[in-house]
Length: 411
Image 1 (cartoon, one colour):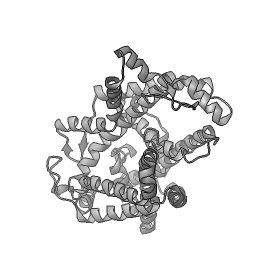
Image 2 (cartoon, helix red, strand yellow):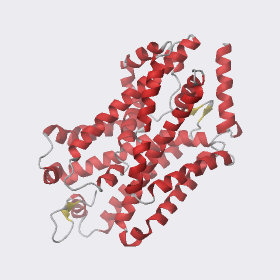
Image 3 (spheres, helix red, strand yellow):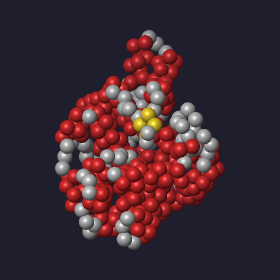
Image 4 (tube, one colour):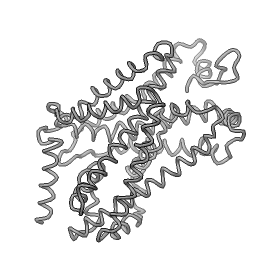
């Protein structure tokens, strides 16, 4: 009991010193911006700007450090965690499946969101970076290699986390499930940080651990912003090509100002709301629309012909079945399940009121509302009967008078 009270005091101390959550009663009163966090975020965005302001030539060099350093830290932490007493308990808990969890919608949404966030489909990031590749680049091999490395990295990270959780369970004389009951940021920034603080050479491991977290965050920010920058430069080349540095600066400033709400005393409540509604379900919906547009409207035959023109071979039957049936059905199931059973959002002792559910849905819809909005706009402005306008919107047409490339208005 005393150890449990000590842990509560430890967590509250971190929340009071860093997040200062105790100064905000909830989402209805966020409070003022924490100037310490604002300065930290300004420093991070300054690094981001000077890493991407010249394009992939500069960000590509920075990524050599930010992408490889986390793997080195993971290996160091894995070796250190494996040598801790009780590490085997965490590994057994990690590898022992709980089949009943498969009936939970939250598990499927979290799994899909994890894949989308780690691989990047739906964000436009892959399209942006792929646009810099040669036309005949073997994207088929790259996709398989990247997906495999991503899954193996996630599997390796699980060992890094649960060996330490086993150590924490051994120290507290409790089960691993008791230590691992906290999910999301709490597991990373409270439980794991507490475990590192109790290790020998704690300062060294704490420094490399949080450096790894910063590197991962920088990588994600580079990719997300580059997706927006590349799309805008391609859309308005004459206006923005020679003013890239100024455009990137303005975009970074907008992102910084938009993030100020998360730096308030109640910023943790905002982050939790975004995490539940504005990330997983919204991205899943965007990917669902992309799959429908490409596989059904544009057509898998045309898409496979494009791949054959680029690579010299066509995707097999398995991939076509996935694009046409398996992926849309699976994604639609997750979306419907989320709408039918919205999650009960809670952070610390604060239970989110019912009006935050409506706010969360509005935030999530805002991520992809432009897609159905343009569909309606095209139906209203096109000529002909409703059936003719609908068929015109989903039928591929040549993109130019002397081009073999086709586009689809719905895409």
